[in-house]
Length: 213
Image (cartoon, rainbow, N blue to C red; front, top):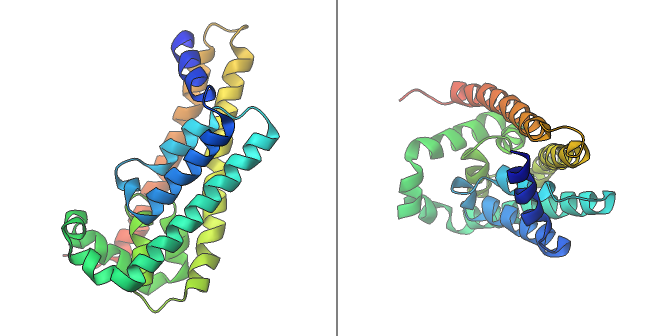
């Protein structure tokens, strides 16, 4: 197991740090602006990029790139919602997303306002739909950014920290423990379980705001 994990980490680390950081930021931009996150989750992109962090400078650069990418992407999503929202909703893509998800986003936003924007950053589907939905709502862009910025910072720091910590711990223990790979997997697994529990709790809160069909 150690050999496999080491090979995977080395593959990621072999990518030029500047390119790797830029790709992570661009991936998050696409995730939050054109719904790529429904296919390739942003947390996967960030965790993978974070495993190659080798220094505090790289850590800070990755954090800033991901935050910037998320804010730019969500700003694009907001603009798309403002100018093309109804058309997107009625398009083939909008119908594929499902009317229930649009109603969930609209209802949650209408009832919770900025809090809905903050919480949506941590939820699948909604974090891609909310920028579009906000763009179609009376909420101002400045208010939208004021709520999504702190959520994006928290989300980014959590994922980058866990990815970097898991990979760093693995490399440090590799020569001393034959089960270092299991420690790496355990860190990621524990984090995944915590994230799943938090998402489940938040999803229940969102569903509680949505009228039953």
